[in-house]
Amino acid sequence: MDYYSLISGSDVRGVAIGENAVLTESVGYRIGQAFAVFLSRRGIEQPRVNVGHDPRLSSPSLEQAIADGLASAGALVQTFGLCTTPAMYMSLLGTPGADASIMVTASHLPWERNGYKFFLPDGGITSATLRDILSIAAETADHKRAGGEITRSAYLPVYTEHLRNIFLTRLGRDNPAPFKGLHIIVDAGNGSGGFYAKLLESLGADITGSQFLEPDGHFPNHIPNPENEAAMDSISQAVLRSKADLGVIFDTDCDRAAIVDETGREINRNRLIALISAILLKEQPGITVVTDSVTSSGLANFIRLHGGRHLRFKRGYRNVIDEARRLTAEGVAAPLAIETSGHAALEENYFLDDGMYLVTRLLCEAVRLGKLGQSLSTLIADLKEPAESTEIRFNILDPDFKTAGQKVIDQVIAYAKAHDSWHPAADNHEGIRISFDLDGVTDSAWFLLRLSLHDPVLPLNIESDVPGGIVKVARELSCALEGAQGIDCAPLTALLN
Image (cartoon, rainbow, N blue to C red):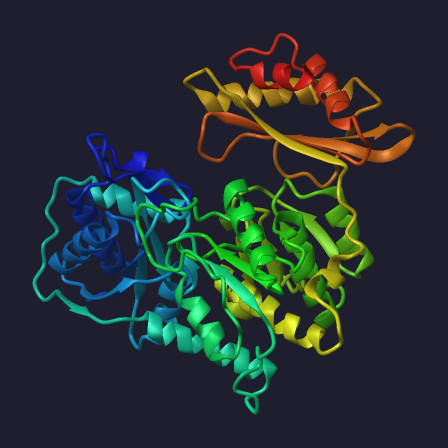
């Protein structure tokens, strides 16, 4: 078994159902043993580990498998059953003596896939740490050790009370129903987050029209993913149907989220970043907001006009979080790390990427604004959005896809240096980002070409503030890519045609 093939960033991911399954119960058992050994080698004599899972069909058995592996290597294991990823980290902080926690999930990926996310007291592990764990799993030795045991309990009720306390602390404990008069629809996508609707209802909200709250590992209604067009259309239509004030949608394991306003307008991606940035900038003027690399020019201007600094960093939620942590350690106020995918981590919440905490923060602000006759959309009314935007993906045909992809990027960089109309972004941290002056307007369009973190793909993002700008930028890029080897340029040709 090639355990390293299961690495996806800092998580384990793989097909878990069917004849092509690679993340099997026996593999989960070995990874559990390896994690216990990893912890013991760090000086933890008898590790105490919490384990929970999302609703996927394979999750209960994979939870049991990794728990069995942990216990066989001498660990004291507590299994929680159905849970969310953020709750599993909070369980680590809230359980006396706990050394680590593991969430069984593959986030928004198709139902036949699954994975493991690992947490230590200082947060999620790094990809380098994951490699260390999997190298132990690949050892031929059996790491059995006496003294391990498994106990079972439920943690979601505890986490629900944690969220309730956040609401009441921020909105005032003198009012046990702070959401009375607000109609909020929750779409859990049949993932782990359906309990949030009941929480809001217990705090006075009208949740009529909420949908897909029951966990179902087949995800029969839509992909639980705030970036998915069908998922966002579904929650938007539900809000309009019910004439609700707000809609809330989570991904499978609730570490990502988005909202919809009363008009059915999606507030995700750049809008979501702008919204939470505006809230934090009112509380802490001058902060730095760390995002991934594909955020828009309009967002950068929005953050600047609201008194903040925008740092556009590398794609990947761990990269964004680690950069915000680094800045914070250096004394820079950087309390927000957020990706366009919806991963949002706030310093006040242990820099944990927690979609449910983000939504809780936004709903508290909605209550405050409602008393002023305003809505959340008021806060981003001055966000300038592009006239056009698109993303296409070039498949890299060379087996050594990272080297081949970098050669293509280097070719584009060389072309940019030779053409004065191409303006490289000074603050770019991956690939190449170029802006253009279209129709006499400075920096009115841009593209970002970068290597995918994990796949043999070169994603290309293009935005334009002027109609027709995407095709103009694509035409410029096609000249730079002339003669490029090892990639399939068909998507660019299709865009131009």
